[in-house]
Image (cartoon, rainbow, N blue to C red; front, side, top):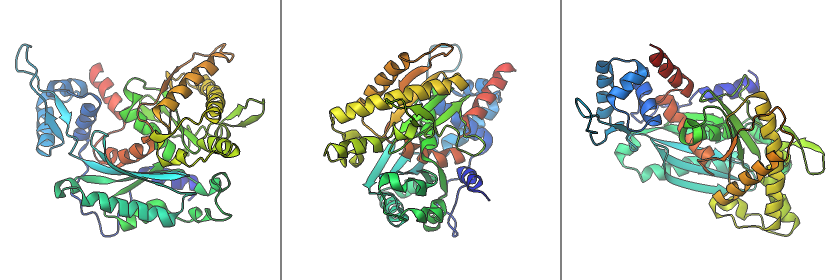
Length: 414
């Protein structure tokens, strides 16, 4: 099996320990998942709303929603009165119905989060390092999960859906950029992180590319409901991204569609370079080092960056210019309604970067191009970890956005 085939399989297949899982969470039936997906996307839907949107009979919807209530997956809101007939009762996802762990593996740091059913982070921990290595990542993941579980009630522990890992593929290719010793990252050629974690834990384990995971988090918990088609840029140690078409992640034949890092752009000197060589945080790290400024605060916590002054402004302007070219290239192929920019930095950096990117786009030759709305991501620095934590929840409880919209369209057409 080729590496691309393995990557695609990893996107789809959970791993569980040989001894089997101890939790009691089960995969819901299709119509239950359909109802949960609609309620997730449209908070406050009533049984009548669900029946109308799905084309299912009122009796079927009533039975499904009663079952979901009994399992504490749905909560009733206050009755809405003032209409003819019985009052409408809005339904909501129960945040404490399901929990999942999300792991982000970065080139400079790792994050572990415990996420609830509506996407809120309940617990989190963070670790920095010079470069990623299995010997310190596996204890960080497994011991961190054990510590978080110890703080949960038995009822909540029984509602853990699994572990989702968001990690760059082919980590060994980035040894020089992160300053790893010669040969130190070659171990990643033979380590199957998903299998290693699954062999140590009792929960199903899922794996997806880190930037694709971040894009999925934006689709589910961010701007996805307003923009069914968008190109997504996530700036971490290295820039990555994703593509959403018809409200669904598009990963392509090999699972690498929307990677965007290798996209050719021109730098301020007119030289053609890859986007990742300009619009990545490791470039800012090098700028700081060149000026004798300690770059370590970049990796401590994304929300705690300080204003580094001139080198930060240089990086923002250079990154914005490169992003502007990437946006125009993307919309020249697919007429995305939006280009969404997010990353592992504070909101104020993201805001400055988006403003600078809009200005840079307006300086380009835009003949024949319909400019998309260029906006800030709504999920933030934890997008990759949240995207990872979403994997077990979607696998067991929800359905793909494309399927959801097809169901709605079919019901409305009948």
